[in-house]
Image (cartoon, rainbow, N blue to C red):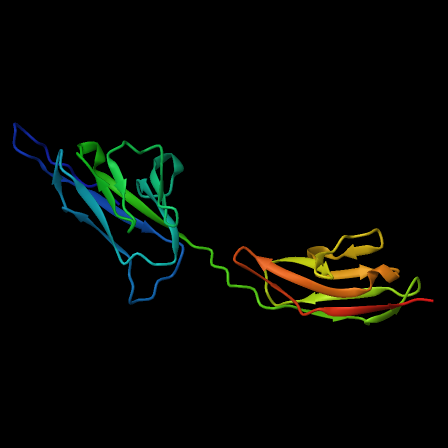
Length: 225
């Protein structure tokens, strides 16, 4: 893509022709009814004027966006990034103090110069959505065991991914002893051998950054003589 041409300005006649073109780089697929576009307002401008790169139809699932000078994503050419939830602006190497990013993604240039002529890239950052976890359940090999003789295995059953699993005994976080082992990911608890102090109500809790949920209690009965 060729760079926009810049007309020569003479005398005190305002030079209209400073062109700011935009390329879009996104990491999502948009439905045909919602096409993200950017327009330069005005389409050409005189030195010293303001130019707005106005964004239309910005998707609602973005966590933020980044503006770059040039036709590609180059951190050394970054103007600024914007975090939607916190409304924070983080200036980059190409930030001159004349640029303003608005919540809708639009980028304003104040007092443009011929050095501002060129192409600009808008990068949208997709939000990482996580659904609330569902209630897990516990599967047990058996619920009545004999002290010093039997082993016990409990498995926390869940279809959720990207979660953490924690075990509870009698509504207290389970304190692991040298007789207890957890599988990778903590989904299975093995106690070998069981003792009378292991009797009680067991629950597992699954959680992700947005929610948590506990299973129904499962009672373990330890028989001893």
